[in-house]
Amino acid sequence: MTHKIDVTYSVAIIHDLSVTRDFIAQVLKKSSEVSNLLSFQNLNDLTHHIQKETVDLVIASVKVIDQLIQKLPEIKKYTGSHIKVIVAIDKDNSSEAFTALKAISNGANDYVEIPSIMSTSMPVKIEATKAIESKVIEQLSVIYKEKHPEEFKLNTIKSNKNIPISKRKLIIQDFDANPSNLPITLRNSKIYKPQAIAIAASTGGPQALNKLFIDLKGEKIEQPIFITQHIPQNFSNYFAVNLSAVTGRECIEAKDKMPVENGKVYVAPGDHHMIVLLENGNKVLRLDQSAPINFCRPSADPMIETLSDIYGAELLVIILTGMGSDGLEGARYAAKNGAIIVAQDQASSVVWGMPGAVANNGLCNAVIPLDQIPSYIQMIGAS
Image (cartoon, rainbow, N blue to C red; front, side, top):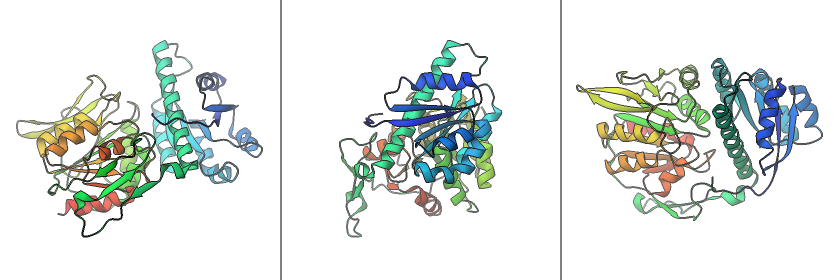
């Protein structure tokens, strides 16, 4: 994160277990961005409090998250529309993952895994501490962006039909993607009908993928689709199931040695890189737990690179909202092989890190809003 938050925020923790509230509070007390830390045992205490004092971010347990989502419209009357919600789930209770993903589909912004009250493992607690810090900073950065839109304006040179697409430039400023405000030039490569689609996402990805696939509902997509969404191990199966439920499309958590079939959507499992190889002439999914890439496992880079080896110029790569630069090297490799590269634009991204990195490096054929990506897929897929 290169953007410095120079203001402070109020964060509320809602959890029925005092030990969990205390653990989260201990982590956040060290944050210079959190000036006011509130702790509540139930939702009613929060709703009474916000009538007197505003709250910017709520970290809520699975037990209260459905109620909280239902009350969000009322809560926003007091806090303003920028308020964000993170769902706190028990790291050792995989069933809570599905509830969290449903909440994200319905209005929550992210999730974070908290150690079980029975856990005494120091590595687990250190991992959870880093996760809480990271997730909170991400959401506070988004709040800052929403409260100060003048600092993150997207400026574009007016497109002109007489100007070749390779000469059109976008000037894009964002706190973690383009600090020097450098111009972005789109690639003017030949476009082939893709035989496969690769999608990479991180922060804001579950909501973006839900919207993308809902907008594609009913459309015939014959190509296999491969998704790397940065997600914990306990989440990926529920994520695939939830994506199937909301989109009506067959979405599967990838398994090692699973054959690739047209029209199916494959989700990289948490804690595993997903790659695609040719074995005896057949396309096969392979999983591995080699070292994290870009601090991520799964990482989008190996997925994109191996797909590029197989499909070459007949690959469509889509980089959605996300912090960091995962997917950049994969996109660079795929672009050299002639693949079509599309990045979600800054204005519609929760965090313009991953798509911004690809766009800033001049790798994109298009940089477009999320709601235009389904149409682009249909247009390119039929070409």
